[in-house]
Amino acid sequence: MNLPRVARTLAQLHPVQVLARPVALGGRALGRGPTAALAPRLRPGFAPPNAPFVAFAESERVRGRARLAAIPEGSLLHAYERAYGYELGADPTVPAPGAWDGPVASHPFPASVRARRLAVAARLGRPGLSAELARACRAVALGLELHLLANHLLENAIGLVCGGAVARGPEAEAWWRLGSRLLSWQLPEQFLDDGGHFELSASYHLALTAGLLEAIELSQAAGREVPALWRVTVQKALAWAAAVRAPDGTYPLFNDAALDSAPEIDSVLALGAALGLHSAAGASGASPDDGPALLHLAATGWVILRSGERAWLAFDAGMDGAAYQPGHVHADALTFELWLEGERAVVDYGVSSYIADRDREETRATRAHNTVELGGADSSEVWSAFRVGRRARAQVRRLDRAPSHLAVEAEHDGYRFLPGAPVHRRALELSERELVIRDEIVGGTTSACSRLRLDEAALQRRSIALEGVQLTPERSPGVWHPCFRQPRAAVVFSGRGEVRDGWRGGFRLRW
Image 1 (tube, rainbow, N blue to C red):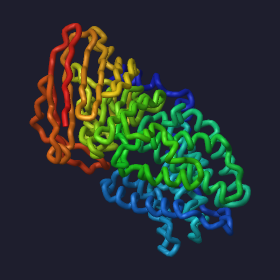
Image 2 (cartoon, rainbow, N blue to C red; image 1 turned 45 degrees about the vertical axis):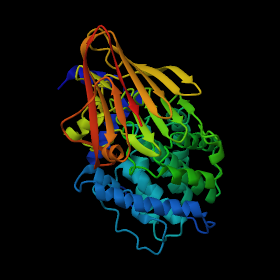
Image 3 (tube, one colour; image 1 turned 180 degrees about the vertical axis):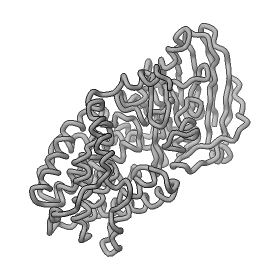
Image 4 (tube, one colour; image 1 turned 90 degrees about the vertical axis):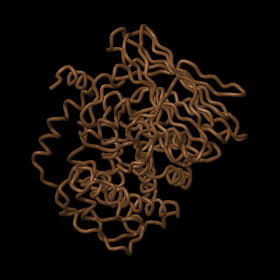
């Protein structure tokens, strides 16, 4: 065991996580799920839901089925997602699923998601769900994931609110009140000033935003007063989602993100609009003349550059993730993705595994991202499946909006542990026909390797020229994963150098 690395990891934990860990382990050791006896009755007589709410429920059924098919059977992730309840969908005439008896059904996270799906199905008129809903909400209430916090605890809160909204009686009221108090605590903690979620993954952001929208709709339908905090938070979260919406309707794959692991971004925006919480005309970063646009999501640390209709770029120039829950962090400081004429061309590696194996190591490593690796090390000390020791801290140094181009410069200190404490500075300059990347290593004596990953199909369909510092294709076949464990061919270029108290490199992409 690497004790210094473990110590660096544990030092970042929130006190609540430390105190709650023994309780969580004790509850898991008991291993018995809650009973469905004396389940609260469901509320009768809901007003008909609007069409976007129904469409969203059905789209989640379709997405959930496809997602489950891509996950290896027998894995914990497969068991979790099988228990989520996405199969419920929007059609009450489809037979209800079998008994909720999977081996992880009483784990709080899948129980939270299932409580939300059951609540939505009940709202849409499916009968006979009170017992399942009671088991799910009881599992959440008895096992709140305080030892994890972050998206897990927020899902716990949303599941309880949704279950409490569609049921009635003292126990349902307790679910709603407990969930509401958790949201009052966690929404200001987890959603940043610019509307982004603090784990800095677009997938988790969309999943949580969708959950909060469903909680608002269900609470309104039940005649409950929706706290202003919920509305304000979701409005900012929707504006953030609109800001990071790429030209092809997807989003950047920074950190743990995959296009199949969350609702489609346009579906979430449409649901928000149907609830009167989002206006496409007021989307952050909109540019009515389709000219150059630069948007700095300062709290998230992402910079969005757009040069007319030809080029759209997302640059990760902030912290690597949430301070005390970095489980979904990748060592990708100062990476970027680039869309050309609406198609993703420079791509992120994506996510190929959620267990502690070689695929997971590759998923999170600096070498898998479009940035500079120093000394063969990772910019953040990622290890195991969801652990991080030493952390990279990045910041934007300069933004420039000129008539002919857009530019951003940022730096990070993730390699400060190496001799000479080197700092990586990167400047990107985007115009209609080219992207210029300039890298500088300030201080230190080590090796440097810059990499660039392009989607092979995009590279074949359009003329993209690489100029400047010599970048050569790597010998081994490259891949990227737009969806979980669904690789697509990529071409990876790399350029190497030696740092001697400083180093400068870079290259130019023309199209």
